[in-house]
Amino acid sequence: MLLSASVHVQLAGETDFAGFRARARALLARGVPPDAVNWRTHTGPADLFGNAEDACTPHMAMEAVPAAAVPVFFVALCEEVVLHSDPQRFALLYRLLWRLAHEPRLRDDPLDADLLLARRMAHAVSHDMHKMRAFVRFREVPDEQGAVAHVAWFEPMHHIVEANAPWFMRRFTQMHWAILTPDRCAFWDGAALRFGAGASRAEAPAADAGEALWLTYYRNIFNPARLKLASMRQHMPRKYWHNLPEARLITPLAAEAQARSGSMIEQPPTQPTRRMVPLPVHADAAPAHGTLDALNTALQHCRGCPLFAAATQAVAGEGPQRPALMLVGEQPGDQEDVHGRPFVGPAGQLLDRALRQAGLAREALYLTNAVRHFKFELRGQRRIHKTPAQREAAACAHWLEEEIALVQPGALVALGGTAARSLLGRPVAVTAVRGQWLAREDGRRVLVTWHPSALLRMPPHEQPRVFLQFAGDLALAGGAHA
Image 1: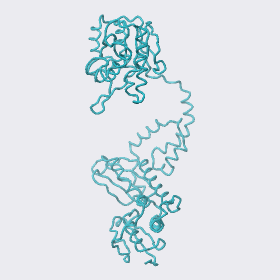
Image 2: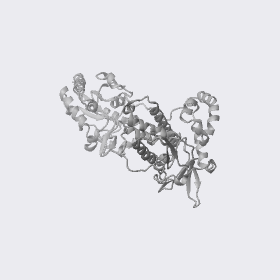
Image 3: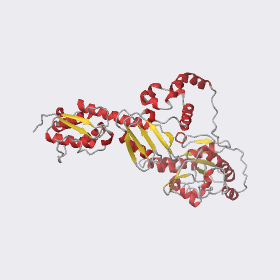
Image 4: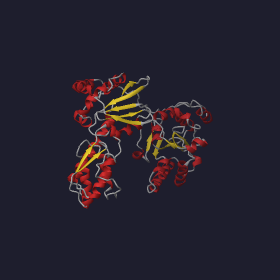
């Protein structure tokens, strides 16, 4: 039976969602239309968390009522809208609840005026919560025991303090803090989160030494060339400026922006502190070690770059002297680092297959690497290959050049970009010059092709085609120096 008399519903506080939900269900069950309900909130601090039963009007018995069948999104929408400052928000939500119960098609109407209004209010609440997280500025305040607390003043647009306080508790768990606002204050002592009545602006702490340090930092990182006032006002509206220490600097810094930008443009270009060092290619490299054994012994004591510290050992080249071909790879892999031999891991197994396809015997070739220590990064217990830097390759260049001078190969095959750069002394695009002969300064020819590990990383459907090309490049090198 419909109730014609006006019903006054008093909630426990401005954000009493539980009370609103219980009373709205009771009113809906009794058939009380939205126009007959007058929603009020209790503003006294003593009853903010008071018993919802006590705040109910006497003629509204709060017996158990069945839950209304509403869409899931509506409950989440209500939880946000009740935080809005509009005094008519509870009337709007009950009107929507009534309509959802009596107008089933409403939930599928994206242009309904009440739903649009509720969603705008929810968005405003969410926006206000984000701005609070961004613009709260804590200041150090000593307490009576001499400990330091951090206090901030903020003026939210909506009733968001209690909903937002857990985020600050998680973000600043180790810090004792208080956030003061005109309507509600939040306190965290490291153990419990408490709330109290609102405060006045006069109770906000004064500037401290940390704020002066922050302003100095802000002034020095300010980049006038990137100043966009319209975008800045969009993300930091002026209504927040009077509570932000750095806001006092915006106007003078913006006024100086054009002059500072001009002075920056007029400055001479800075010289980079790091320059790309070309890898040396010595046409007349004289070996400092008389034999390969002496070279490899000295290699184990190499400290030319930091890679030695994590690697098991340096991996020397392997093969006969005066071979038709010397194959140069990038660096040892995990298995090569463990066994101390080049090309014994998965990439080496693929290389062996390609050599057989090309009609070449591994035992007749000399195999080595441009970098002699394994560079990797740990992922759990696995050591994952990491491409060596140019400086690391440069530190190993003299080992490669001495090795070439001692081995005296007929020609060289560069397996991958790192090897090609080390052999030719300049960057090389492997895909652009693959299968072509290039000349070194010492007159030796270099054929560039892929590193076998690159084939292993390719999609499975591409590997057969690329493998044939790779084997063809090796056959070309072998045929030219048979």
